[in-house]
Image (cartoon, rainbow, N blue to C red):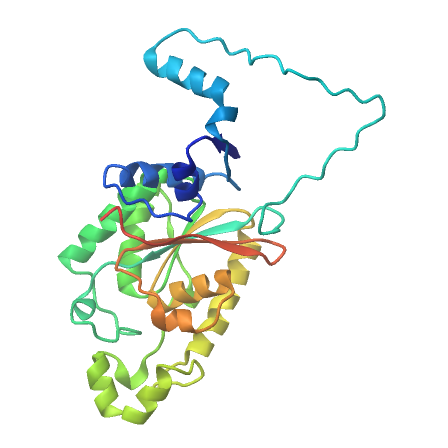
Length: 301
Protein backbone atom coordinates (compact mmCIF):
# COMPACT_ATOMS: atom_id res chain seq x y z
CA UNK A 1 0.00 0.00 0.00
CA UNK A 2 1.38 3.39 -1.03
CA UNK A 3 -0.07 6.45 0.72
CA UNK A 4 0.68 9.89 -0.77
CA UNK A 5 -0.58 12.99 1.02
CA UNK A 6 0.17 16.66 1.42
CA UNK A 7 -0.01 16.68 5.23
CA UNK A 8 3.56 16.50 6.46
CA UNK A 9 2.28 16.12 10.03
CA UNK A 10 0.17 13.02 9.29
CA UNK A 11 2.89 11.41 7.17
CA UNK A 12 5.46 11.78 9.95
CA UNK A 13 3.02 10.59 12.65
CA UNK A 14 1.88 7.54 10.70
CA UNK A 15 5.50 6.71 9.90
CA UNK A 16 6.21 6.69 13.65
CA UNK A 17 8.73 9.52 13.56
CA UNK A 18 6.52 12.12 15.29
CA UNK A 19 4.25 11.65 18.29
CA UNK A 20 0.48 12.21 18.17
CA UNK A 21 -0.12 14.76 20.94
CA UNK A 22 -3.59 16.19 20.31
CA UNK A 23 -6.11 14.18 22.40
CA UNK A 24 -8.75 14.29 19.65
CA UNK A 25 -6.30 12.83 17.14
CA UNK A 26 -5.09 9.91 19.26
CA UNK A 27 -8.12 7.61 18.71
CA UNK A 28 -8.05 8.42 14.99
CA UNK A 29 -4.34 7.65 14.81
CA UNK A 30 -4.90 4.34 16.62
CA UNK A 31 -7.69 3.39 14.21
CA UNK A 32 -5.55 4.31 11.20
CA UNK A 33 -2.63 2.33 12.62
CA UNK A 34 -4.79 -0.76 13.09
CA UNK A 35 -6.03 -0.51 9.51
CA UNK A 36 -2.47 -0.09 8.24
CA UNK A 37 -1.36 -3.15 10.22
CA UNK A 38 -3.66 -5.25 8.03
CA UNK A 39 -1.42 -4.66 5.01
CA UNK A 40 1.90 -6.38 4.36
CA UNK A 41 3.61 -3.00 4.04
CA UNK A 42 2.47 0.63 3.99
CA UNK A 43 4.73 3.37 2.62
CA UNK A 44 3.90 7.01 3.42
CA UNK A 45 5.10 9.75 1.07
CA UNK A 46 4.72 13.50 1.55
CA UNK A 47 3.63 15.42 -1.55
CA UNK A 48 3.99 19.24 -1.38
CA UNK A 49 0.57 20.88 -1.65
CA UNK A 50 1.59 22.75 -4.79
CA UNK A 51 2.03 19.39 -6.51
CA UNK A 52 -1.18 17.93 -5.14
CA UNK A 53 -3.78 20.49 -6.23
CA UNK A 54 -5.94 18.10 -8.28
CA UNK A 55 -6.29 15.52 -5.47
CA UNK A 56 -6.84 18.31 -2.95
CA UNK A 57 -9.68 19.73 -5.08
CA UNK A 58 -11.32 16.29 -5.39
CA UNK A 59 -11.13 15.77 -1.63
CA UNK A 60 -12.67 19.18 -0.92
CA UNK A 61 -15.47 18.60 -3.43
CA UNK A 62 -16.23 15.20 -1.89
CA UNK A 63 -16.42 16.68 1.62
CA UNK A 64 -18.67 19.49 0.36
CA UNK A 65 -20.97 17.01 -1.42
CA UNK A 66 -20.24 18.48 -4.84
CA UNK A 67 -19.98 16.44 -8.07
CA UNK A 68 -16.39 15.59 -8.85
CA UNK A 69 -14.49 15.27 -12.08
CA UNK A 70 -12.18 12.33 -11.59
CA UNK A 71 -10.24 13.01 -14.77
CA UNK A 72 -6.81 14.32 -13.91
CA UNK A 73 -5.56 17.33 -15.83
CA UNK A 74 -3.49 16.49 -18.88
CA UNK A 75 0.26 16.70 -18.35
CA UNK A 76 1.93 19.74 -19.84
CA UNK A 77 4.65 17.68 -21.44
CA UNK A 78 4.83 14.12 -22.70
CA UNK A 79 8.10 12.27 -22.98
CA UNK A 80 8.11 9.54 -25.63
CA UNK A 81 10.77 6.91 -26.10
CA UNK A 82 10.82 4.64 -29.08
CA UNK A 83 13.24 2.18 -27.55
CA UNK A 84 12.13 -0.47 -25.09
CA UNK A 85 12.12 0.89 -21.54
CA UNK A 86 13.32 -1.34 -18.73
CA UNK A 87 11.01 -1.64 -15.73
CA UNK A 88 12.48 -0.49 -12.42
CA UNK A 89 12.79 -3.27 -9.87
CA UNK A 90 10.13 -3.15 -7.19
CA UNK A 91 11.64 -2.12 -3.87
CA UNK A 92 10.99 -4.55 -1.02
CA UNK A 93 10.77 -1.59 1.40
CA UNK A 94 13.36 0.44 3.24
CA UNK A 95 14.25 -2.46 5.55
CA UNK A 96 15.13 -4.68 2.58
CA UNK A 97 13.16 -7.58 4.11
CA UNK A 98 11.64 -9.98 1.57
CA UNK A 99 8.55 -12.19 1.68
CA UNK A 100 5.42 -11.99 3.79
CA UNK A 101 6.20 -11.78 7.52
CA UNK A 102 4.69 -13.73 10.36
CA UNK A 103 3.11 -10.96 12.41
CA UNK A 104 3.04 -11.54 16.16
CA UNK A 105 0.65 -9.51 18.28
CA UNK A 106 2.20 -9.64 21.74
CA UNK A 107 -0.29 -9.20 24.57
CA UNK A 108 0.81 -9.10 28.21
CA UNK A 109 -1.60 -10.68 30.67
CA UNK A 110 -3.83 -8.60 32.96
CA UNK A 111 -3.28 -7.61 36.57
CA UNK A 112 -2.66 -10.12 39.38
CA UNK A 113 -2.20 -9.60 43.12
CA UNK A 114 1.56 -9.98 42.73
CA UNK A 115 1.74 -7.35 39.98
CA UNK A 116 -0.15 -4.91 42.24
CA UNK A 117 2.61 -5.32 44.84
CA UNK A 118 5.34 -5.32 42.18
CA UNK A 119 6.66 -8.73 43.20
CA UNK A 120 8.63 -11.13 41.00
CA UNK A 121 6.02 -13.34 39.41
CA UNK A 122 7.53 -16.11 37.33
CA UNK A 123 6.37 -19.68 37.54
CA UNK A 124 3.90 -18.97 40.34
CA UNK A 125 0.29 -19.05 39.22
CA UNK A 126 -1.75 -16.15 40.65
CA UNK A 127 -5.12 -15.54 39.03
CA UNK A 128 -6.23 -12.28 37.49
CA UNK A 129 -7.79 -9.71 39.79
CA UNK A 130 -11.15 -8.14 38.93
CA UNK A 131 -9.23 -5.32 37.27
CA UNK A 132 -7.12 -7.88 35.45
CA UNK A 133 -10.26 -9.55 34.08
CA UNK A 134 -11.54 -6.15 32.98
CA UNK A 135 -8.23 -5.46 31.24
CA UNK A 136 -8.46 -8.80 29.45
CA UNK A 137 -11.99 -7.98 28.24
CA UNK A 138 -10.85 -4.58 26.98
CA UNK A 139 -7.97 -6.14 25.05
CA UNK A 140 -10.34 -8.79 23.71
CA UNK A 141 -12.74 -6.15 22.40
CA UNK A 142 -9.95 -4.30 20.62
CA UNK A 143 -8.39 -7.36 19.04
CA UNK A 144 -11.78 -8.87 18.25
CA UNK A 145 -12.77 -5.75 16.32
CA UNK A 146 -9.47 -5.85 14.45
CA UNK A 147 -9.83 -9.53 13.50
CA UNK A 148 -7.55 -11.26 11.03
CA UNK A 149 -5.94 -13.53 13.63
CA UNK A 150 -5.08 -17.07 12.55
CA UNK A 151 -4.27 -18.55 15.97
CA UNK A 152 -4.19 -17.63 19.67
CA UNK A 153 -1.22 -18.99 21.61
CA UNK A 154 -0.66 -18.59 25.32
CA UNK A 155 1.82 -19.30 28.08
CA UNK A 156 0.75 -22.27 30.20
CA UNK A 157 0.42 -20.05 33.29
CA UNK A 158 -3.11 -19.25 34.43
CA UNK A 159 -2.92 -15.46 34.20
CA UNK A 160 -1.91 -15.65 30.54
CA UNK A 161 -4.46 -18.32 29.73
CA UNK A 162 -7.28 -16.32 31.36
CA UNK A 163 -6.32 -13.30 29.26
CA UNK A 164 -6.00 -15.40 26.11
CA UNK A 165 -9.38 -17.07 26.64
CA UNK A 166 -11.12 -13.68 26.76
CA UNK A 167 -9.62 -12.69 23.41
CA UNK A 168 -10.11 -16.11 21.83
CA UNK A 169 -13.81 -15.97 22.68
CA UNK A 170 -14.10 -12.69 20.74
CA UNK A 171 -12.29 -14.26 17.79
CA UNK A 172 -14.13 -17.62 17.97
CA UNK A 173 -10.77 -19.39 18.12
CA UNK A 174 -9.36 -21.98 20.55
CA UNK A 175 -6.43 -21.21 22.82
CA UNK A 176 -3.30 -23.22 22.20
CA UNK A 177 -0.77 -23.46 25.01
CA UNK A 178 2.87 -23.01 24.01
CA UNK A 179 5.38 -23.90 26.72
CA UNK A 180 7.99 -21.63 25.18
CA UNK A 181 5.96 -18.53 26.10
CA UNK A 182 6.18 -19.11 29.86
CA UNK A 183 7.65 -16.39 32.09
CA UNK A 184 11.20 -16.44 33.48
CA UNK A 185 11.78 -18.81 36.40
CA UNK A 186 12.83 -16.46 39.22
CA UNK A 187 13.67 -19.39 41.50
CA UNK A 188 14.01 -18.45 45.16
CA UNK A 189 13.12 -14.83 44.36
CA UNK A 190 9.59 -15.78 43.33
CA UNK A 191 7.11 -13.59 45.21
CA UNK A 192 9.76 -11.18 46.51
CA UNK A 193 9.97 -7.47 45.73
CA UNK A 194 13.07 -5.98 44.10
CA UNK A 195 14.22 -4.70 47.49
CA UNK A 196 13.62 -8.03 49.25
CA UNK A 197 15.56 -9.99 46.62
CA UNK A 198 18.40 -7.45 46.75
CA UNK A 199 18.57 -7.69 50.55
CA UNK A 200 18.50 -11.51 50.45
CA UNK A 201 21.28 -11.92 47.84
CA UNK A 202 22.88 -8.49 47.39
CA UNK A 203 25.91 -9.47 45.26
CA UNK A 204 24.03 -11.98 43.10
CA UNK A 205 21.13 -9.59 42.57
CA UNK A 206 23.51 -6.78 41.58
CA UNK A 207 25.09 -8.99 38.93
CA UNK A 208 21.72 -10.32 37.76
CA UNK A 209 20.36 -6.89 36.86
CA UNK A 210 23.30 -6.22 34.52
CA UNK A 211 24.38 -9.64 33.21
CA UNK A 212 21.92 -11.77 31.23
CA UNK A 213 23.93 -14.96 31.86
CA UNK A 214 23.40 -14.80 35.66
CA UNK A 215 20.68 -16.99 37.16
CA UNK A 216 18.57 -16.20 40.23
CA UNK A 217 19.10 -18.89 42.91
CA UNK A 218 17.35 -21.98 41.58
CA UNK A 219 16.06 -20.05 38.59
CA UNK A 220 16.65 -19.24 34.92
CA UNK A 221 18.94 -16.68 33.28
CA UNK A 222 17.73 -14.25 30.63
CA UNK A 223 20.08 -15.94 28.16
CA UNK A 224 18.23 -19.21 28.76
CA UNK A 225 14.91 -17.41 28.29
CA UNK A 226 16.12 -16.01 24.98
CA UNK A 227 17.17 -19.46 23.74
CA UNK A 228 13.69 -20.92 24.28
CA UNK A 229 11.98 -17.80 22.88
CA UNK A 230 14.06 -18.13 19.72
CA UNK A 231 12.95 -21.77 19.41
CA UNK A 232 9.32 -20.75 19.98
CA UNK A 233 9.54 -18.03 17.33
CA UNK A 234 11.11 -20.41 14.81
CA UNK A 235 8.48 -23.07 15.52
CA UNK A 236 5.63 -20.59 15.02
CA UNK A 237 7.12 -19.14 11.83
CA UNK A 238 7.44 -22.65 10.42
CA UNK A 239 3.88 -23.60 11.37
CA UNK A 240 2.21 -20.28 10.49
CA UNK A 241 4.22 -18.65 7.68
CA UNK A 242 2.88 -15.21 6.79
CA UNK A 243 0.05 -15.40 9.35
CA UNK A 244 -1.15 -13.02 12.06
CA UNK A 245 -0.75 -14.63 15.48
CA UNK A 246 -1.80 -13.49 18.94
CA UNK A 247 0.75 -14.46 21.60
CA UNK A 248 -0.40 -13.92 25.20
CA UNK A 249 2.60 -13.99 27.47
CA UNK A 250 4.64 -12.13 30.09
CA UNK A 251 7.12 -9.29 30.44
CA UNK A 252 10.36 -11.14 29.71
CA UNK A 253 9.20 -13.21 26.70
CA UNK A 254 7.58 -10.17 25.09
CA UNK A 255 10.62 -7.97 25.72
CA UNK A 256 12.82 -10.71 24.30
CA UNK A 257 10.78 -10.96 21.09
CA UNK A 258 10.97 -7.17 20.69
CA UNK A 259 14.71 -7.28 21.38
CA UNK A 260 15.14 -9.93 18.69
CA UNK A 261 13.02 -8.02 16.17
CA UNK A 262 14.97 -4.81 16.80
CA UNK A 263 18.31 -6.66 16.82
CA UNK A 264 19.49 -4.67 19.85
CA UNK A 265 21.49 -5.52 22.95
CA UNK A 266 20.28 -6.74 26.35
CA UNK A 267 19.85 -3.23 27.77
CA UNK A 268 16.33 -3.27 26.30
CA UNK A 269 15.37 -5.95 28.84
CA UNK A 270 16.23 -3.64 31.72
CA UNK A 271 15.02 -0.32 30.28
CA UNK A 272 11.81 -1.08 28.38
CA UNK A 273 8.61 -0.82 30.41
CA UNK A 274 5.59 -2.96 29.50
CA UNK A 275 2.24 -2.24 31.10
CA UNK A 276 -0.26 -4.89 32.10
CA UNK A 277 -2.51 -5.92 29.19
CA UNK A 278 -0.38 -3.85 26.80
CA UNK A 279 -0.14 -4.72 23.12
CA UNK A 280 3.04 -4.77 21.01
CA UNK A 281 3.51 -6.02 17.45
CA UNK A 282 6.63 -7.60 15.93
CA UNK A 283 7.06 -9.03 12.45
CA UNK A 284 9.54 -11.71 11.44
CA UNK A 285 10.31 -12.27 7.75
CA UNK A 286 11.28 -15.58 6.14
CA UNK A 287 14.61 -14.11 4.96
CA UNK A 288 15.63 -13.25 8.54
CA UNK A 289 14.50 -9.63 8.52
CA UNK A 290 12.26 -8.23 11.24
CA UNK A 291 10.49 -5.06 12.27
CA UNK A 292 8.52 -3.68 15.22
CA UNK A 293 5.20 -1.95 14.50
CA UNK A 294 3.89 -1.24 18.00
CA UNK A 295 5.21 -1.17 21.58
CA UNK A 296 3.33 -1.06 24.90
CA UNK A 297 0.04 0.25 23.50
CA UNK A 298 -2.65 0.54 26.18
CA UNK A 299 -5.13 2.76 24.33
CA UNK A 300 -7.81 0.08 24.75
CA UNK A 301 -7.71 0.30 28.56
